Length: 395
Ligand code: ATP
Ligand code: MG
Image 1 (cartoon, helix red, strand yellow):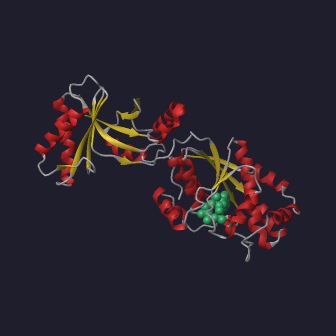
Image 2 (cartoon, rainbow, N blue to C red; image 1 turned 30 degrees about the vertical axis):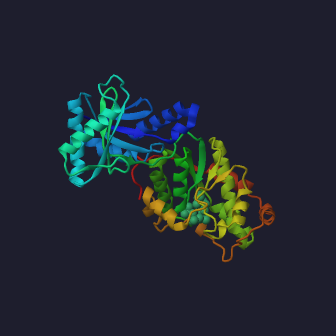
Image 3 (spheres, rainbow, N blue to C red; image 1 turned 120 degrees about the vertical axis):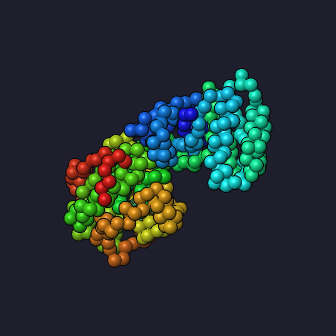
């Protein structure tokens, strides 16, 4: 009796003519996620099946599939010969496991028949199998509206029988929406922001600014590790590590103290945009949420937007901090994010930053200092890593 995994993808159905492209991307991403586990990914009539997974790798495969965007849910299923005796025997085995967990469960048989030559139609299977299950397990009852267990039988080349539906990450396959560049700090928010954009099909690259020796080697490792954790969902990520000390020193020395944070953020955006352009990214992504800190008022956001021509995507803009923290826990970045290493933003923080900067004022202050050479030097000395989830854990 072969065990397979049946993959459901919903949103892709919305895409009309693009559908084959989306499906192809999803299949590629599934293959990538299952690398190292013997398996075959097959497509049949709007469904994806993964076959040939050794029993010992089954749980691992399920865990990996849960992180693939574009998958709505999966069901571990038995693929068996479709003679009626085998179908009922397999259905009983599945029900037995469920009844062990809850003897008085409610259930419904849900049959689908793509093989129109099969000797019974779906209504017939529903009725007949429902009847046999009731006979075999007298403690259960039928609920056709809200069953606790849906015993599903699909008659195709083979019979696919399953009773469990495992919810997955949903969203769109990574690679179906183009590329954008995430400004990643060592904090809680930016990895979550990256997660949400990858969930909409974006391929991520990432930029991190560090201020060695004011920020430590450990702070750098922390960002590489966060990027690695994010790549579990987003696929491999090119990470640009930009040396930012000279620029920060210059801002600190030459700009009005209350404007240093805003100007620093504008320079980060400018450099990030240059890097984004160099690799065909169409937008920048940050972890900002409206009102969270002084540099995230609407006025401040307008001032940072003004520094670049690319759209700045802020998927967390309407989130409360505790909801962002819940997501960080859910996607596994929280514990790393809270490790106490300095971020370059927390070095040289002014005592009284402007909370409502005027774009014109900030432009004027910035124009008094020539950053051109420092920007070029920072880009020149940027280190680029390709980070993937299979890499060893860093911290
Ligand atoms: P996070 O938790 O993501 O650090 P935050 O609430 O601490 O966010 P800020 O430190 O003001 O907020 O940063 C806002 C956003 O700016 C971050 O979400 C990130 O996108 C970007 N950012 C901040 N610091 C850096 C950095 N050192 N390198 C790259 N991007 C950064
Ligand atoms: Mg931060």
